[in-house]
Image 1 (cartoon, one colour):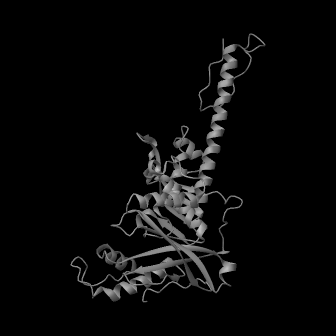
Image 2 (tube, helix red, strand yellow):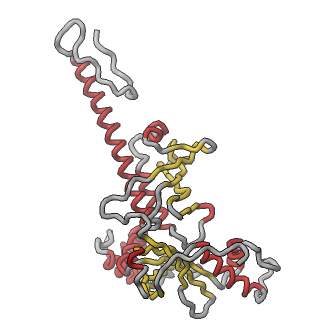
Image 3 (cartoon, rainbow, N blue to C red):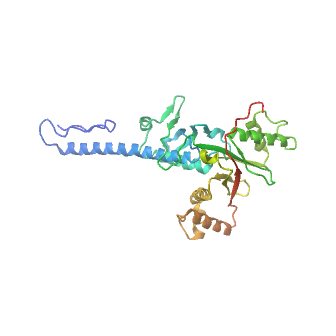
Length: 350
C-alpha cells in the first residue's frame, strides 16, 4: 500500500519506502517531488513577499526617512477583485512622522504618484496565492476591530538607501499663491507651517465676499485653512517636506531645492513637488509620463519611452506641445536660507 499524498499545508516529505519493499514506488517518488515543489513554492513566496515589502519601504523612505511602520488596507486584495488584487496605503508612522490618507494635506509628504508607486509594490506582494495565513505568518498583523487593515513593520533600509535617524532634519517648504509673486518659506514642522498659513488666511478672511465662506474663521489652524481653501478657488498653496542631512544643514547658509509644477489640465493648479536636485525632479516627472506614454506614442513613432529620464521628458512634452494639449510642466530652483534648526511648535494660544 502506498503512502497517501500529504496536504500542502503539512509541508512534510512522505516516507520514501513502503513496509513491503526497500525501493520507493513511483507514486511515492512523485508524491515526494510534489511536496518538495510545495516547499520550494512556499519559500519563493515568502522571499517574494519580503522583497516587495523592502521595495515599498524604500519608496516610503524617499519621502519619510524615519518611517518604521505602515498600515495598509487589504479589503480588495483578499479575495482578489475582478481586476486583480489591490492594496491601499492607510498610514505611515515612525519618528516624528504620521501620515494618514484620511487627513492628507495636499503636497505634504506623498503625492498621488508617490503613493501609487508604494501601493504597486505592496500589491505585487499579493501575487502567487498569498492569503491571510501567509500574511499572518509574515507578521503582517490585522487589527482586531478591522480585519481588512494590517499593521506592517518595515525592514531596515537597504544598503545604499537613505538611512533614517537623528542625522536627518526635515523642514517644511510652504508657498502661498494669491496671483502675486511670493516666496517659499521654510518651517521646522508641518504644524508650524499650517500655523503660519492660518495667520495669512485669517488676515484675508474679512476681505473675501464668498457667500459660502463662514462669517468668522475657525479657531483651529487646520480647520481655518481647510475652510478657506475649500471655498476660495483663485488662491492656493502647497506644502512639502524636504529632508536634509543634519550635519550639512546646520552649517549651510542656504540650500537649493527644485520645485516641479506638473499641470495636466488648465482648469486645475496641477501637482507641485519639491526635490533635492534637478536630477531627482526629472526622474520623478519621468516616472509619471511613462505611465501615460500612450498619449504620445503614435505621434512620436516611439512605442516605448526612452530609458534616459531627461530624454523621455523632453520628447514627451515636445509632442504634447505639438498636440496643443493642456499638459505642461515648469521646473525651477529656489534658494532657501539657513542654517536649519527645528523650531518649537506654536502654542495653543499663538
